[in-house]
Image (cartoon, rainbow, N blue to C red; front, side):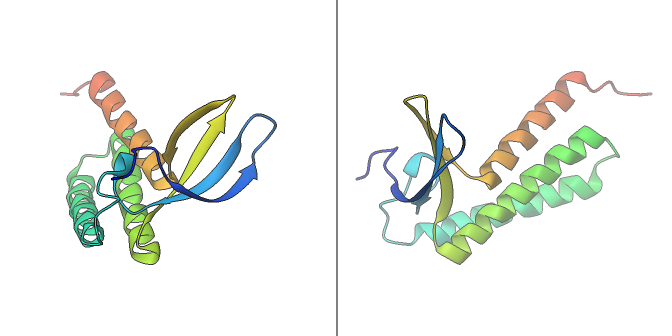
Length: 133
């Protein structure tokens, strides 16, 4: 079984003076969960992502016009579909690992970043939205 932070690096590109972006692939989910499975995890993870995309789409179309809420849902939807494309195109999840100042940050991809920012927007919307009467 692989270690949670073990990824097979493909290419490294300097991104400024202090860190490099390293392209890595993960056949599993977050933190390499299911990465060592023989291949059945890809259709399962695609199905979960597509189910999430359908649910988020329904929420998006049924929601009142609240810009922050809709932007958060749109980012989550885009991230879920981006992960589906990665899995179907590459049969794995492409990520970027950032070694910075001697620290190695967890790997992530643009789709996961969109999901995280979208979730943050939903939290902010929930905290600061005032119901109008």
